[in-house]
Length: 316
Ligand code: ASP
Image 1 (cartoon, protein in one colour):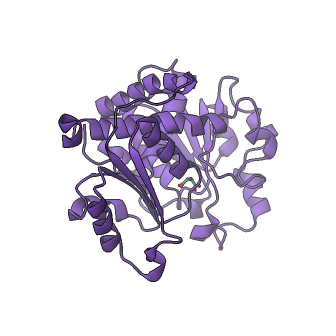
Image 2 (image 1 turned 120 degrees about the vertical axis):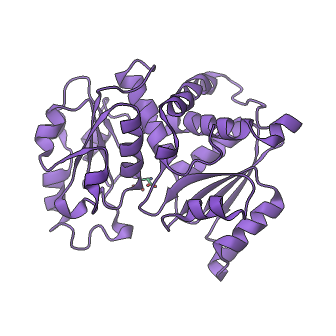
C-alpha cells in the first residue's frame, strides 16, 4: 500500500478496490454494540485542520478511535496558527509528539503534498481537502456508496454513469471523484455553467455538458456540488442564486427525469434551496446521510491500510 494518500490518483485499480473491500468489512463493525478494534492501539493520529469542517473532521476522529488509535485534534482557530505560526513549525511540533498519521485539511492547494515531501513529519499524510484541489477520502466514500447502490457492493463501477453538477471550478470533491471514478471504470459527465468549469478540463477523464436535463435522464447517480461562496463562487460567476438554481439546481421536477434506480448524492454541507431543494435532499433516493456514515468505514480502511504496514505495528 502507498505511504501517503494525497490524491485520488495515488490509488490504482487494485488499491482502490482494496480500500473499498476493507471498508465493507469494517462497516459491519458499526452494527456491533462495541464498535472498537485494537488494530491501531498505541499509534497516534493527528487531525490537523486549518479550514472549517464538520463531517470530515468528526469522521476521521471516529475512524481513528474505532481502531483504538490515540487521536489529537488540532484546529487552526484557537491555536498558535492564529498567532502566525507556519505550517512547518506546526508540523515540527506534531513530529515532536510522535504522530504516526497526519490528516491535514488546508485552504491552500498543495499543502498536504508539501507536508509529505518536506520530511517535517515521519508519519503518513492524508489529504482531507486542500484548497480547490483534492479530497481523496470523499471520493472513496462516494465510490463506496455508489458501489453499494449500483454494483451490489462488489467489484468496480464499470460503465456506471455518474453526473457531477455545479461549482466544479472550486470543488476538490469533483476533481478527486473524476480521477477515482475513472480508475473504477465509471463514465463521468460534468454539468456546470461555463464560468464554473476549470481551465484544463479537457485533460480530465470526463465529458462535459451544459444540458442538465439531458444528462440526468442517462444517469445512474447524480452528485450535486455546493456553490462555494467562501471561495468567491457567487461573485460574478452566474447572474443570481435564483438563476443558478433554475439552470443547475435539482428539484422534484428534475429528479423525476432520473431513471428509477438512480441515487442523489451531495458531499455536504448543502445549500438547500440553491443547488438542491429540501424535498430532493430529504427524498428516499437521496443517500446524503448514508455518505456520512460510509465515510467513517472508508476512513478506517484508509488509516488501517496506510498504518498497518509501517514500523509501529511490527513493533507492537
Ligand atoms: N465538504 C466538502 C469539502 O470540504 C465539500 C464542500 O465543502 O462543499 O470539499
